Image (cartoon, rainbow, N blue to C red; front, side, top):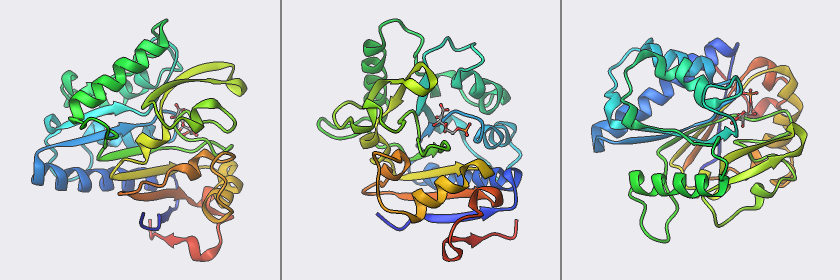
Length: 256
Ligand code: 6PG
């Protein structure tokens, strides 16, 4: 795996515009070569502005949205209209522009009572759309990830069962600190990706970002450290507030 690229931006808006541009550049390249592009979308608050920019078409350049398939990285076990639903956030942002065909959007049905079946069905959908070979991991072309102040990513929270999952592609995970359940892609799937982009913003994450990016490798303690794609690139787009405790040599400062 290549060394992660770390870019620091003045604020969340600059970070989000750069993230949207990076996504479009990688997507354009893939669509031009193979008329295909698959994406994993995390939830939470940080990526919201990036998804809004992509959904509004504010980024210069033409994208053939019909050639892109969108998957969810994780979802809360609530109905898609619930305030906590990641899919609801996608409907309000990326999907709001109406440019993306419904058939290209693969929702994680985490509200289903039988979560194990919901995970199996989602894994089947991944395999079918990505044409995954028997015995292979599904390879997403691009994955948006976030990181919580505790070092979690996707719904892989420190000390939870799903962090050590090495067989299932998608699994439910009970999050004690949140007193709630989620469905999440597992680390082997995230590590099969071709391109991972972490979006992390906010002073409350500065200490953890320093630990994750410049501290010892402890992926059980900080699951975000477990994202090291064997055949892929990882970039971290940070704002100044989040990056303030990083050692100087870690910062590829942007003039943004
Ligand atoms: C989710 C996300 C989760 C998120 C982190 C950071 O479902 O909430 O997938 O992993 O990326 O919790 O969340 P914020 O961006 O809101 O800080």
